[in-house]
Amino acid sequence: MRVISGQAKGRRLKAPADDSIRPTADQAKESLFNIIGQRVQGALVLDLFAGTGNLGIEALSRGARRAFFVDVAKKAVATIRENLSLVQFADRSIIWQADAFSALSRLRRMGRRFDLVFSDPPYGHQLAKRSLRVLAGEQLVQKNGLVIVEHHRNDHLPRQVVTLLMMDERRFGDSVLTFYRQKVEP
Image (cartoon, rainbow, N blue to C red; front, top):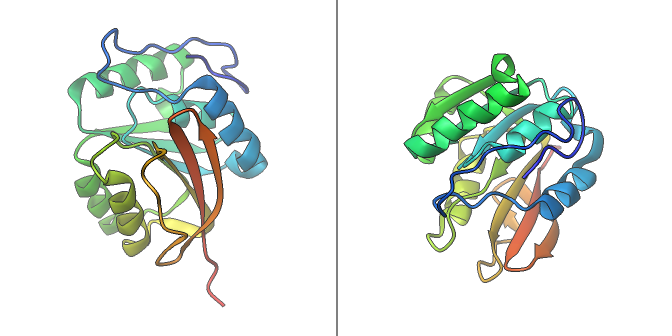
């Protein structure tokens, strides 16, 4: 697992030796960032169920302004801290060890709204759909902001979740990246 482009291009990121974290594959990550293109420049990013911090770090490397990393697992948070130190992005990052849904409620109370949200929950727990509902319901996505959900190919996500509209889907083996755009109010 490496940073593909930008300021930290080519830097290898750490992942736990066991299978406790499933990082996004480099091929899927490269496709994701090719699709979102320049939208990452200056973006406020939320990396939800962050694991290794792989996606948020890639966004920072490509010019995101700041990234919030949220994961409930102590081992994941330690890995994110280590990776941010390796690429020297700790000063543009906030890491919370918290349940994703508690963190989303806290972010809403703080008035945070994100330009890009990466949601990569553990497979098989219906957390992908739930995270979409909460992100939309808590109004945590900026107008025209993007939410990218990584999920198992057997989890079929809805075309619309409140004001989030599906705009693309890409399959990589058993994983699917589904892209949602926050609808602009008329």
